[in-house]
Image (cartoon, rainbow, N blue to C red; front, side, top):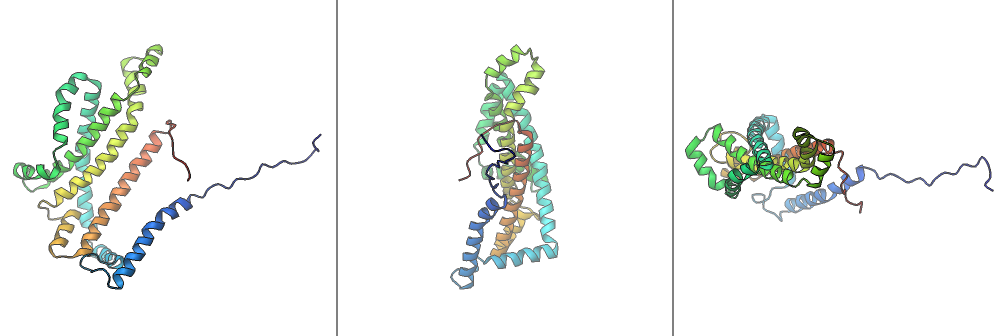
Length: 272
């Protein structure tokens, strides 16, 4: 017999703190920066080749104080946003069309796959000849980079939907519209969102190429101008701007993924 009025408490498990993984993630970058700073201050690294982190930080401060940072960043963000919207929308539309229609796949997909393998740098001279050095050529070059990633992943997402789900749709008597909105698109959404993530990255790569081909403003122009005058710290500042903004946009898409794909029960890895 168990004694009455005796509280049996389960052993409490301490929940892992969310701050610990973040701190561990910052450990390696902080260690690299510390070694970098010490080696540069001791004269082991040439400041022309690799300036110390505090010199790059001072360059950032001067850019922000003068207003140049905001000016160039605003122009680059506008170009990247317009180019991504144009290229991503076209990639999404054609990817959906080719995914749903075998006839469209036969007509469009071979040409698109062939053009996808052509490097940006090889197309850049043509864009200059066709559209000049203005904003149109830069935006179209950015759009081209975003287009292929969104198109390919949208197409693959639709074609990778399990055929057995259509049998379930027939049992439930779904019409064509219900099959698309309630079956195909939700199942293809992980691939579509992956295409958007990759398309944003490709848009940033296209932005760098576009702003280095004759621009008078933007972060890419800032890097090219610094290279011309051998200001290595300013080159690093521009690279870090691209990295930080690219990471922020990628994090926004990942947040969108978590919200739209709550229904998905996938493997999340182990805490080891």
